[in-house]
Image (cartoon, rainbow, N blue to C red; front, side):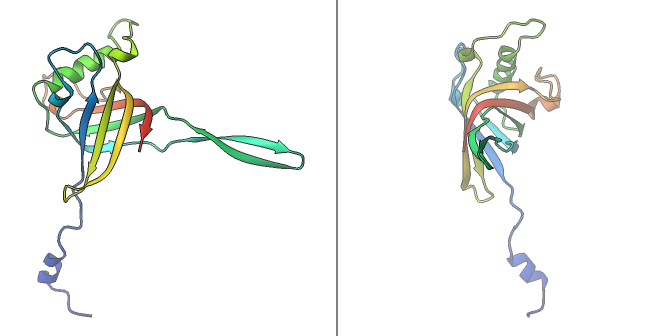
Length: 170
């Protein structure tokens, strides 16, 4: 085996990947004026999707039992930690969208067409190739985590959102 030198270590390149997730809105909830899906520019440094639970049905037949997979639970909560790609229209959109999902101080809830949207999340590798695409349907904001979306703090440009979706297509 050849000696290990600093030149040989440098020749290895970067083996730690700087992965990111680009978020593209396919549709916005109805009722938003002055903004389109192309106006929203988000990038995530972290995107967490939980494992999909599969339900099983136990079938008893004479002397044996068998577990049969039935269906997946498609309601999932996932988290996004954004990075600095907030445009002037993005932050007010996120704040208004969150208020549509749960109006503060009331029990009023907007209809699904006015609070749910469709999102594509592109998992990009260090060399900017797309590794995976998540198609999220019926997405709405569950909570804003610890981020103040009022725009008064620096953390408002790096929100951490918890979203939920009835269906995650991978």
